Amino acid sequence: MTDLQLKKSLLSCPGDSIQEHIDHIGMSQAELAERLGRSIPKLNELIKGKAPITKDTAIKLEYVLGVPASFWLNLERTYQDELLEIEQMEYLETCKEWVQGFPTKELKNWGLLPDTNEKTILAEGLLKFFRIATPNEWHAIYQESSLAFKIELKHTVHPQAISVWLRLGELQAEKIQLDTFDKKKIRANYSSFHNICYNHSDNWLEELQALCASCGIALVYTPCIKKAPIYGATRWIKNYSTPLIQLTDRRKDYNAFWFSFYHELGHILYHGKKEIFIEGLEEIVPDKDKEDEADAFAARMLLSEKERNELSKYPDFNKELILQLSKKFKKHPGIIVAQVQRIYHQLYKDAGLNSLKTKVEFTELSM
Image (spheres, rainbow, N blue to C red):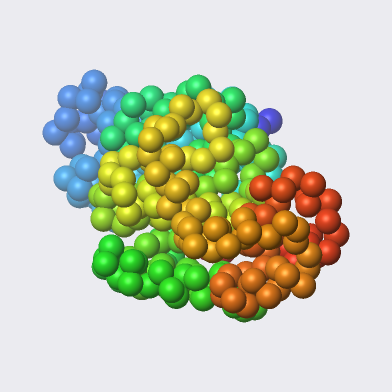
């Protein structure tokens, strides 16, 4: 017997207790109806649980049966709670198929879903995770044109995984204390962004997040999820008052991380609040002009035109030269190596240059 079947079998309406009391004192339903001032059909509805025990009815039952009104009201309240639980369990049974396709393993590992394989429990957890009433709302928000989410994922191969990754970013952003968004402050802090990238301290990720927060930007780091091939995403949340930059560790490369960060920052600086940009999903056709503009901004932030021109003057590169240029430009050597290798493909196999690269990996989900 399932939990649902057991609960149904044990469910007892307050009318059962009313019947027991009148049986005990030798009173018929007709007599009770007369003493309560009710019709027999109305009393029968009460006995069968089709009508609730109101405060007025509870008081009358106290007078007629000698049992306190509080007893009847508590009995009714308990019955309604049990009935609600059964109805909820019955509904969640219809949601079991919807759970398929979601990365429940990752969510359980992060403590965002109960550690169980029971589909009804997982369905309930997913509804709360997405803050939706039914699976229909998930389809409306993520796969159709909606007010809450402007990019339709219905053309993507794995919309469940993508929607989870995006939702994680929103939950992470809720934990960050932000100043008021200020474009001028962002531009005034370009050198601070560069310094964080160049110095690469042990807590550089926290430094970058704090700097963004001071400019009114929620920057979150969300580990890569299987079947969600995203490099980064930008959108405005909280009624378009807060820009959210969400980055993944998919490429696990320092240069790729900073390019993605600056790319998303470019979207915030140059593009509209009602637009959503998700990088890495081939099924969603991007606005090429806006993507090119964000790419150009990212490229300028990584290396200035003057610095790129100087790189073009060298016929060859080695580790020592990269370190000299890094000190001169005040740019991280891994950034320079990546830019050089994009021009001279044969240098991708240079062990000395590759030793200057830095790995980026989000080992846990910060919530």
